[in-house]
Image 1 (cartoon, rainbow, N blue to C red):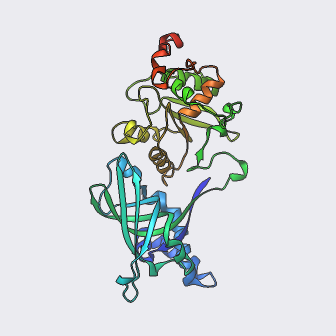
Image 2 (image 1 turned 120 degrees about the vertical axis):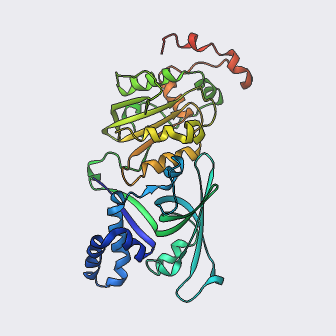
Image 3 (image 1 turned 30 degrees about the vertical axis):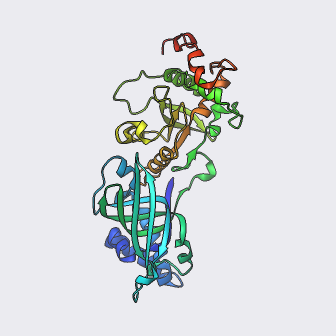
Length: 360
């Protein structure tokens, strides 16, 4: 079983207790009174109670809400981002030590996240040093203002979020974690550290998406490969993947030569809805494959969906280089004539029908 743990740097006790409700708050206070220093322990006990309640409270990932265009003022959201924290000492008043923060993320366009909180409410004196300068942190907060490409949050919690697998001794996947192609047992014979040339990258762009899908299905041992249709949530669903030695279910989204360039969020349908549909599949592992580079903004969006407190999952990214290494191991990477300038190589490569005579 996987659970979420929260370690607080900042915690607004009144707002957290309001979120938790009377019953959970009383349970947390009762646990704190059993500690040697109840007042010092209370922020940490409240954070533990908040972590246990996140799923039932419906706290969604901010990036996912933006992508789905489902964000409103007053909504409580969570975001794990690279924040820049700044103390504004000139605005200090008794009991109030303002600290502002900013962060950016890409949801098809750059979105700026801003806000301010009272640093006098840090969970401990040592936590203050963790809220200085640039720091990756998990923030839970209320949306107080929405403007064009800017979101203002009032923090309830800032700190560290961890996904803890109580069955970790048994191995397997940890929800929220990124899985790499080298973790897949069916890819054991492939050297993902081997050099991959510019010509080979070009060759990948000549392999039809259907061929890649069937090749991957064959490696995995999945016999049932559905035909593409407009309402699909994924291109391939299988329960035959072995990741880190354990059999898991996996849903795959393939993106082929129809998009022969670096993938950004906009390449994945209107508002990136192909990611959203992929994560509606009942799979433990969600896989995104592309014939070219996959930009960090897409990886970040996959990560945000994977960390959704309501149902954390694992995800895997297979870009054009790793796709090429897999195809090369199968002898399916078309040869590019040597000595030609790269811009002329496309015209020198045989057509898809000649390279791949089977009708996929």
